[in-house]
Image (cartoon, rainbow, N blue to C red; front, side, top):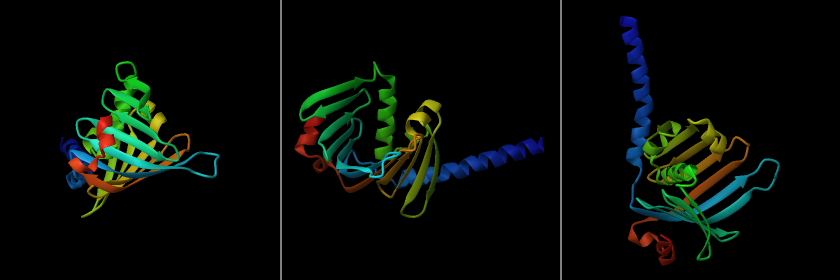
Length: 199
């Protein structure tokens, strides 16, 4: 009985040790109602020497979703909410995927929203979360719990301080995507009029 109790105590202490950095990281992250900034994305495809690079702007609006506007090399806008993914070409809707018809839409949107807003609590439902933190910065590694998600996404690593600064996605295919966030602004003035209209 004593051995069983000792084993349970060690196991629970191990879980607490793992949970502590996640709680610490969560407390470090700012949670503004509106956050916008610049992203620089690089995708390295297996078998292709030159990486694909793009840049643009993103906005995360609490309770609404994410706006992802690629400006270079080709203009492209995605709006992700819990119910749908909408792809705009200019002001015209080029594609709409609804969560009612495509259940994966809700999962994809939840993952992206949680990643960009640094909501580790939401991510823990879908990923095994392993993190480290010091006084001003943190790092997190995510591994998908479900085989289907692992096949689609693979492993994700994030780092930052008050905001997420870098995301790296290592797909099972061997493709790698790196996203760097900068020029972050928060509050009502963070969005342009054009971005606000898209919401």
